[in-house]
Image (tube, rainbow, N blue to C red):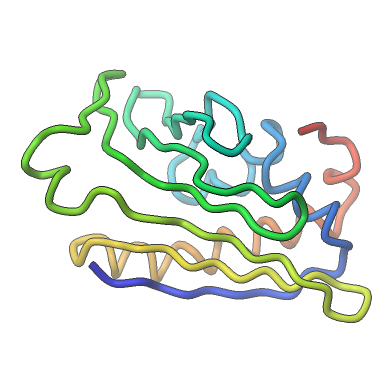
Length: 153
C-alpha cells in the first residue's frame, strides 16, 4: 500500500470548492474521468456509509471517517462492490482494507488549496497517478465556472 499525493489551487473560495466536490450533480462531472457515469449513494456526514458506484454496479463501499466542512473530509474505503453486491470480507479485500482518501482545503489568498492523499494498492498506482490530475483539473474547471454555484450538497 502506498499513499499518493495530489494538489491544486482553485480560483474559488473553500465553500464553493467543497460544494462542487460533494454535490451530486457536479460530483458526477469531475469523477467521470475515473469512470463515466460515476455517482455516490449515501451521506457525507461523519460516520455515514457511502457507496461510490458506476452504472454497471461496481465501485467501493465506504464510511465517512471525518467531516469538517470546508476544511477536511476523510473517506475510509472498506471494500469493493461488484454487480451491486458489497465485498468487505474476501481475502482480496482484506489484503488492502481499509484505506483512506483524504481531502484538505486551505485558503491561499483568494483561492483554495486542495490537497488529496489517497492510499492505493500497487496494481492501481499507475492508473491513479494518471487519472487524479485529470479529476482535479475537472473539479477546478467546475469551480471556476458557473456550474459550482448551481449545485446543492
